Length: 243
Length: 104
Image (cartoon, rainbow over all chains, first blue to last red; front, top):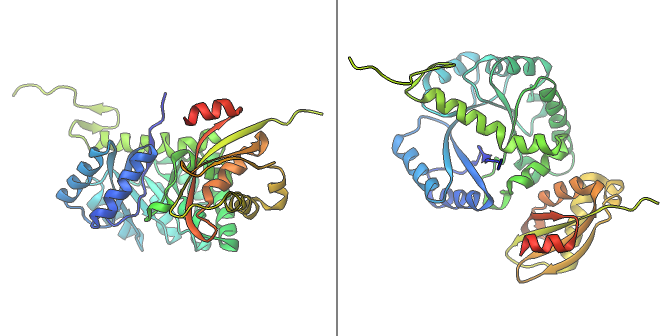
């Protein structure tokens, strides 16, 4: 079965149409089938329609995604209540331990991400992984810092990532590998992204899953949930009777 | 002595100004050494087989045991000879014949 390669984190400013078009075109050329550009606030339907049309033209499926940096737990729950049903993927950047724990145990959160530079704020430990494994959250790893950083900062990042990946695998938390790039020159082929995961201790099959199966499953699951026919997990409307 | 198994990689260069063969292979060596150290680099048995300037395709050879090291290092390259560049792996094969048939 051919893999559906996914990049859920193209960090281009969607208001810059030319740059967005170029980065989506390149993603299509590189063999990605699902791409996403994160929104940080409410998304306008016409903006989304434009991005979807832009992507469909080059044979790529666009996924709506929201990134949020909550300061407190209340902030997080407020955001989720407001935006969960508007976006197909919700990613939470965890800057505090309280937020990280709350995000890991909330079933509305899809992706957990942590700051690349401040390794004191990488809270993905065993407790976090245990909470995430009981829910649906996946650990998101951005590849861009591995390309941009050098020397001790890259060493520290690799050290943290290797530990987090090992913990995630132990607790069966899915890992999602994204590019996190804003510039075309840092974009890589999906298999090259998977190769980079070798540095953080992922074997080839798991690394390929992290750029294909794992993100694809999140998108599929949420699309089912957001459809009009969804009632509850395992229950959906098959046919409506006449009144 | 056990025969060393090798793999050939076809690499696509993406850059505005074309580097020379020397600059290209130096960039690959530098990336391997930077990421995996001199001991890691010494296990790769890296060598440049061909360098097609027109198509911007290079073929390199490495030992099978160090294939992941080389693939990761090549993906990390962001510049060659001081100029912005990216290198993508187009194909990996055990023989040059199969590699060229894949790429062509």
